Image 1 (cartoon, helix red, strand yellow):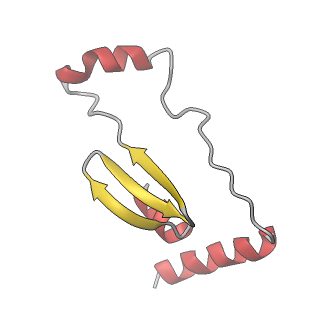
Image 2 (cartoon, rainbow, N blue to C red):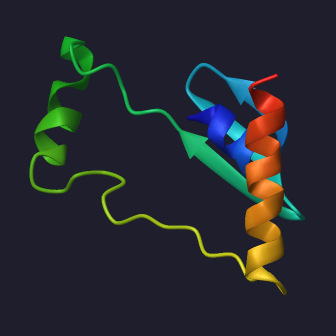
Length: 84
């Protein structure tokens, strides 16, 4: 998922640890945290809390751009370069 934010959206990675990553989205800092390992008994209470409150469901990021079509072309070009 981290590659989506860095390669597709073009966010700059500021720091990364096994449980989170910090990204710069053109001056806005975003921190993405990993969910705990679901098989680990240490996180049983956390898993039970998630059952009725799916973490991340409905989460969205909204960005204002001046030219949506031009930004879309930029994103597609980034994907093409990634496959090289």
